[in-house]
Image 1 (cartoon, rainbow, N blue to C red):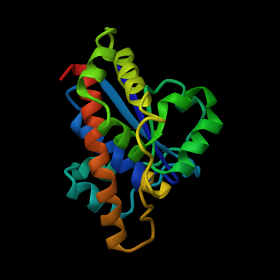
Image 2 (cartoon, helix red, strand yellow):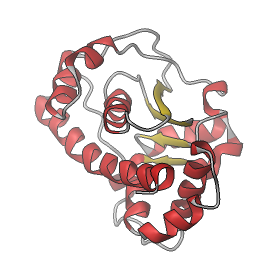
Image 3 (tube, one colour):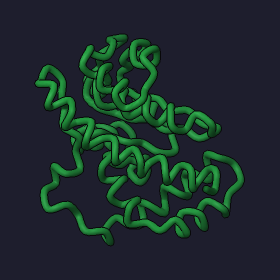
Image 4 (cartoon, rainbow, N blue to C red):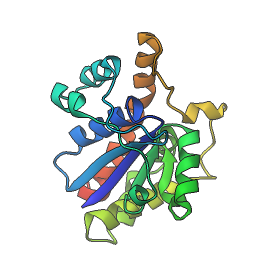
Length: 198
């Protein structure tokens, strides 16, 4: 079984949306997707706007309604094969909590940018050296991580972040979704190539 965790501040808007999209789109593969927040909220649901956004992007209403926030701990970072932060500040928190996970931790949009610059064949070759889903995904992630320093960084570092819509306008929620969803598409591509070979 492979593991992915998504991380934002409160674990009530961005990271649950990322988690739910990945869970929905990778449901046929042998893995788990979870999420957590750096701020320490415990058992708080998604705001109505975040649920609406999730449903708009194809998440089942029951899944969106069932979410409860979880505080991020060092233990939660020990086993995931891929750690996706929704902004650079969250990645910093992840690396401070679990320095050994540096190479497995990305912002979601950074991972998507690097993945878009990684050929399918490079991911497949890396993954095919392994048998179990976890090792295969770790190898695929390593192939993407190898593009660090080779792929041009964004002109503005904020382009690696997904905007936080919490307590902001519906337009901000929509902008957050527009930043997040194309990046999720790249994650799904890498996971499918790595784990399923297709």
